Amino acid sequence: MTPAARPRKRDRRYWLRLLRLFVVALVVALVVPPLASGATSIYALTHSFCAQGATPADFNPHYEDITLPSTHDLELAGYFIPGDNRAALIIPPASNGGRGASMHYARMFNQAGFSVLMFESRTCTRQGWYSLGYQEVDDVEAAYHYLLTRPEVDPNRIGLHGFSSAGATSLMAMARLPEIRSVSAEGGYHDYAALLGTPGAGTYFETLYRLSFIVTYRLITGTDIQNLSPMNAIPVIAPRPILLVYGSREVTLKGAEQMLERAIESGSPAELWIVPGADHGQYLSLAPEGFVQRVVGFHQAALLGSTGS
Image 1 (cartoon, helix red, strand yellow):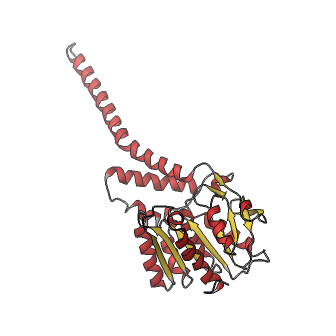
Image 2 (spheres, rainbow, N blue to C red; image 1 turned 180 degrees about the vertical axis):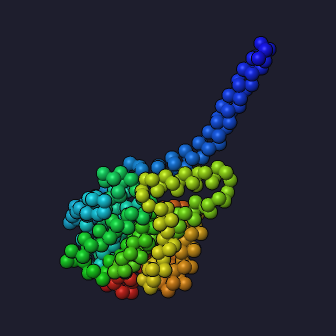
Image 3 (tube, one colour; image 1 turned 45 degrees about the vertical axis):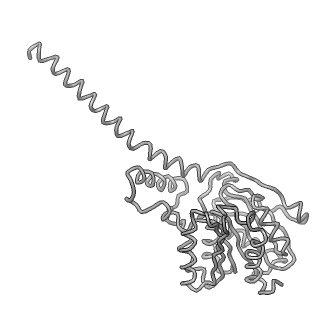
């Protein structure tokens, strides 16, 4: 090899190494951000600080601190708030809610005579994360079996009320527990996988984001995101009554309309109450009188008869 050829060969190697580095950097720049974004999003949704909330002391000093044994060897702290009409409402926690995070609902139902059972999110236990509603059906089942031990509760007069992901949990729990007689669900998703979009559809970034979101969810929870589907639970609930509560500005309203249609097709006496001007979680604050009339009245009719007695 001539002395002149050696520099040319070194130049080619240099440029090949530079090209490889450029290709690697380009791949990293195109792949890592959407994958990291999807993984970070689902991690943030499933992990958050526990929000304990209040106690029932200011409206019912006769409440009891209870513990519910659930799956995965978890012990869930809860409140049992006795009522006087022999009916009971289970209020599952949404997301990172502690056992007192839904106290505004507990007050409303308890003052109407219902016993109320509330318990903490799995986020508040040693597990430390929340499955967005699916595994939490096990916790509703534990709450139901606890109510069967209470002499002041008629086993044939138990209902469910849930907000957001707990609304989804409540609908899925109704499908598993045929003994529960009524369910009201606010602002929850209808099918999580459908909300993420069709696999392969959308932009390159959206496709990788969706893939990362789904895979990370499975790694965290050990279950498939396809299981997050109140829509699939709806036909199993029939013919028990369903009340869906959503705001007119809610992004999940279209899914609620689909659930209503399926419920009616399946033979459930179902209703969708759309609160004018309300966004996620604003139903009670914007329409307090209507909320009592529609939601409390719904459970009174389902569990006590139309007279509410």
